[in-house]
Image (cartoon, rainbow, N blue to C red):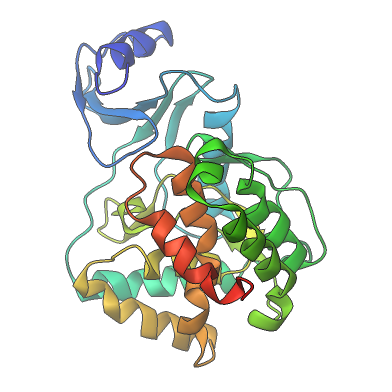
Length: 293
């Protein structure tokens, strides 16, 4: 079904949404097939499915994540219209505007999410998915242990990661994990989006920022910040970073931490996609100081 919408239409009809007679391809996603459709009453909907779902609960976990961001964090997300093993149907959002004002609004929304959802532990009550790979969310009391075990070392053993990173790289990653308490400040856990690259930032009906495709957990807020910082946000987004730092009281060294925090996402990209758009080279460069000489 990859790259086509025929399978999406078939799944919509199987789910009882028979008032849809066509699906147009949608761009932007990497892990699933997506499309745009219109119901008989004119309501537009966004539709997403996998060729083969990596697990039965993938879309249920995504729907739950969208609800958590909206209900606990006050962030705009699409309405979930239908979710089962094979299909996710959402209300349609708008493309984000290319203005600095929009990114200022996002800074306020994300700062509110991160500062208003503090949690005593790191994790989530269930595992969920980052693309097509399981995101392990086992509860931990220690943020360094959680990040090392479930966000970095978790990717070792993935075939593409083992192929891309040699034994010295993998050992360097383990040494970096051992030194995380020296490299990163102690920070509380909060609710995070978990996959916050620029393509997952859209706009709601009122034009204000809205988020899609979450992989939520309670972890360090800077995991979200790092993902935006290192995935080529548009020029008008630069206002976001200074304002977010001011609103959340970040120290002056926050930029220095971004490569370490973004290792998790680069490893996930290596594990899932070929080519990896330079992720392996970036990982090796970040690990270079931790190789034995």
